[in-house]
Length: 443
Image 1 (cartoon, rainbow, N blue to C red):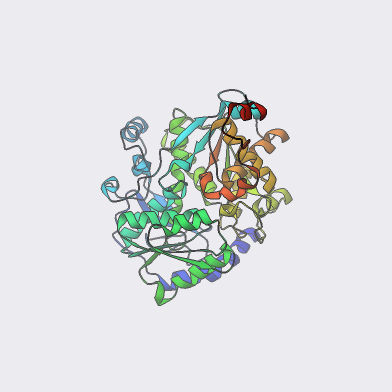
Image 2: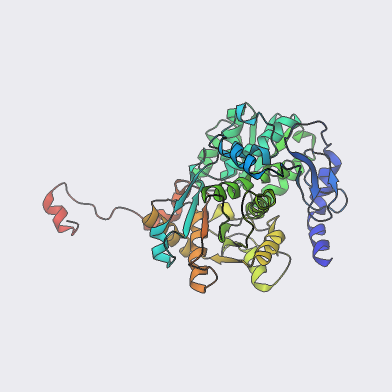
């Protein structure tokens, strides 16, 4: 009860604002989604643009009427679907005709069998895979969650798509809004990597830098929702958060389908808000419930950067709640010092027998280079965190090198060039002659 009470206190201010100022919407078509359910007390609410429970201020998530009872038929239906996340429309809060609407259609990214990386890390051949989500339309996994939020925004009649972002989400919202004909206005910390700033601005929407950290940006957006200025705005990671978060489940669905409808034994997932990790676990549990995969144990491991590692610190200390930190790391896409899903990440890591670990900035850079050198995948800093933590966990004996493990790369390294630029460049600069090439020792 103490853990639940602390979680309630943490959310009470923002939650009360949300439930007082936003009405629910009736008769919306969101496919198998049937209600919003509180993750703390279980209370149910009608589908609408709300994110917090009126009774206990806990976070809301989507409840479903899933198509149970015919796993073979469902599997065939999925496999016959488009090569994007809408192949899983029967399991998502979207209408049946979603694939025909203007959308960026993200997903079905590569699951790379990483035998070269496995050899470097001491993992058995054929056991290590990288789920490379840099192949999405704006080159990060955020396209998945925004695609879900966009469909909710359509259903609820919003005209402006918005978010608070550490970078990748801002670009994903801008692109999705442009494609769908929405106005966009996104908010970011003022000191983001220039590549992410440009990518967020190029789609023509409004981009606003806020002086402060991501947590300051998020608080501002929550205040804007409660003000007349925010009327008609769908904030994908605030008032549309229950729908937005479901997009991360598609990572679980794809991984299992790409493994031949099998659960991986171990997954290593980066932690920012923690929502991606918790929804991947939810997706795995749904596949088990539906009979699409054989039920067996799996372990989930969370990865953070040392300069912003509140969940890792809580896990190592044996705590059930997360103490906020002020971020100081090159992994800015993970720099959320007060992660909303932190307590739930702890629950999942402990329930599955996993762990939460962190690596410092130097290890992040080394891991980016390691993945690029071995597999030809240039990851952004979040991917460096995940690969670095994977290496650390293998060395500590926490990850079993004889079992299947899937490591997530959630974004493209071209967005975070500053992280590797100081230590990466030409092997040599020579005159255009064969003698100069020989003298450089490269022949």
